[in-house]
Every structure is written in structure tokens, then in C-alpha cells.
Length: 256
Image (cartoon, rainbow, N blue to C red; front, side):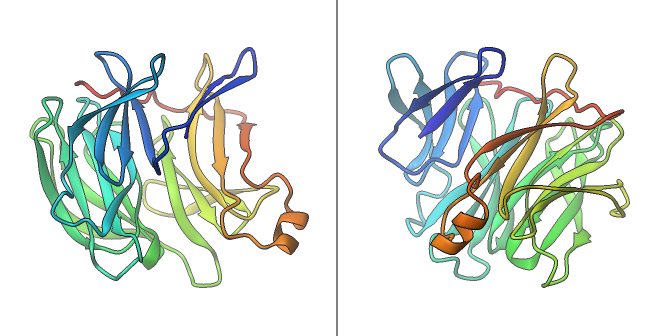
């Protein structure tokens, strides 16, 4: 399902797709670009209809798409993983507005959160299996990446990096799965702040609101046993956090 939440009226609209969906990004031509196991689709919210857009992983039916985000040129970057999380089967793709695509990197196990520095010189990309957020050199005009290296690596006892966003100061906000927290990191990878969450599995975060000063955090209830759900009954909720003195950057719609 795709949820459309009105933050002013506090009304949530659910659109059930009958399929797993992992990404929903507004398109400049209308509707949403959504990622399903059978490809990237255009979703018309009003009619609830899906139409095929492209399918970079069509030759790997055991793979599905996971997290995705648009760079500031409106190109979609999206990672994939093996549905059984077999090692090193995931890829990173760039999808252009005309539906063409290119495999940009490979060998990931659980492809996850993405983001860009404010100056568009770095791109961040997460492999949750390796508990690592990588940084690439990013060529904004060409839409290419180079020189991948680890920026943040968490200890096995310190949770797993999931989705992320970048604020106007270039700091990374990372949802840390199984650690009950969101962490803020400097552009050099130093942890600056931890925000405790009432749930163990925050999944991603994004700045919103009129001044981009509200951090919205999604969370998961999947695969939590009854005892865990009793300890964290808000699992699966959407949270809003005000962080004094911090503002985000506008997210980009897909240019197609």
C-alpha cells in the first residue's frame, strides 16, 4: 500500500496496490513512481491504476527493489536486493526521466538509504547487511559516481543503518534499525547526536513542513514478536520530530 498523509489535516489516505511496494516518489508529469517486484510503475492515485514504466531487474526475478531517491536533476537512483537476501546479489541503478536506465554499481546485499551532499559533490548509499553507509564522488551533470568508500560503519551490537536524509549543513540523519534511534552524522562520518525513538525499528527519515524543520520518521512492525510489540506498541507508526536549529533540504520529484 501507498499512504498519502496530510500533515495539516492529519488525514491518512491508503491506496492498496495488491503488491509489495518499496518506493513512492512524485512525478513531474503527475502521479507517483512506485517500485514493485515486477518493475517500476506509474501510479495514478485517483484511479488507483498502475502502468509499467521500466524494469531494470527484469533479468533477475529473485530480486526486488528497495530504497530509492531522486538526485537534484530528477533522476531516480534505486537499489535492489535478493528476496532471500542472498549475499552480493543487489545492484544500484540510475533511472532517467525517459525510462532508460543504467546499472551504476553492484555487489550489494541489502541496498538501502540514499542521499546527496548540499553541493552535489557526494552521494551516500547504504548496504544494511554490511552495516555501512558508503560515500561516492558524484558528478552532478553526468549523473555518475566513482571512488566508493565507507563513511559510517556500525558495530554489530549498535544496530543497522537503514534509510537516511541529509540536512542543509550536509549532515546525515540515519534511521538505525533494531537500535531504537535516529543518529546524526557529520559529513566526515562522526556521530553528533542520537534521538531515542519509542520503537526499535525506525526505517527512514525525511525533512518536511513549511520550513523543512520537521523530521518525519517511518518505522516497522514487521517480524516483531508479540513480546516486542507489547514493549513497543507504536511500531509501524509515522513520527514527527522538531530538532531546534536544524533544517532539511527539499526533496526532488522524478523528472519523468
